Image (tube, rainbow, N blue to C red):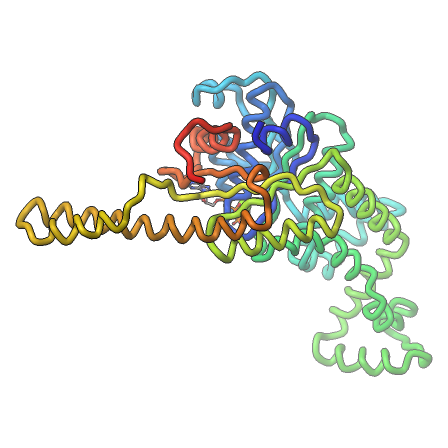
Length: 382
Ligand SMILES: Nc1ncnc2c1ncn2[C@@H]1O[C@H](COP(=O)(O)OP(=O)(O)OP(=O)(O)O)[C@@H](O)[C@H]1O
Ligand SMILES: [Mg+2]
């Protein structure tokens, strides 16, 4: 069994993480597709603002709830559909609203928060919100017990580590002592009155008020007032999610491309997972250039001979030149992958070659899943 097969067979939650653009969404979808094809009931939760995944699964839109992918998609692509594949795309703002309704002590208080202008401004954009809501959704899907396997994609952050820190950052912000301290006069007494006890805050507020306007401050203060009584809910949930991610139900798959920068980040990420006691399962080395034999020295001699010829010889020389350039890319990748091998043992890797076509349709995803679940035998590099 390769590590992806093993994880898919034994885990209930797979988190696909990695740097921007390396193939997280594709990997998550391809793993989910294969597991569903083999008989599991699978949900794939993607965070793909480009909506590439919706179109490759033949869905017009991915809603904030899982939608079942039609069996015909499987059969048309020549694969079995023993199980079920449900796909959803995270809608951060809607999930935040759901969270507010869940934790607010009363529906009226939730309504007040949702209507608040400060909330409406931050709920879709605040740093870390998307990641927090992704984990929130994951937890929600997990507790329904509806799925044998949940595969979760992670947001296109520049830095994969942001994902791990996000829940802490968001709860930190919502709880921010500094912020609440400064807003205290507003929170206590509304706009008309400022308590003298908090002189520094009052002075600060006066300055801020001049810059951003009183209405903004009031909205902000009102937001935090209404949030009172909800922090414990947030924190408790964040703890439960953390415990679930650390449990042996979960495995992290780190996706990387064979570039130096991406490999360095994958190695660092794997180490951070270890430190955070999060179960690291496998590295997917995606978009590896295939290797077709070697012998660059012999090739170079051949090229100069051909260059001396007229007609077809010169054309062949150009082609071989092209091939040498390709081989240089391959060699560079091999160097980067040796660096990876020194940190992550090869039995934890799965390679996916640079496919001729982007994995933008169902067949493309099937092609990627064939590679992810390959146990060898095909053309490979070592
Ligand atoms: N092995 C592959 N061969 C060819 N194309 C690939 C391969 N893997 C992924 N792609 C293509 O690369 C593009 C980026 O992949 P994908 O969207 O999965 O990356 P991502 O890590 O989710 O990106 P982001 O960080 O922006 O969310 C897609 O168009 C996808 O079809
Ligand atoms: Mg993506």
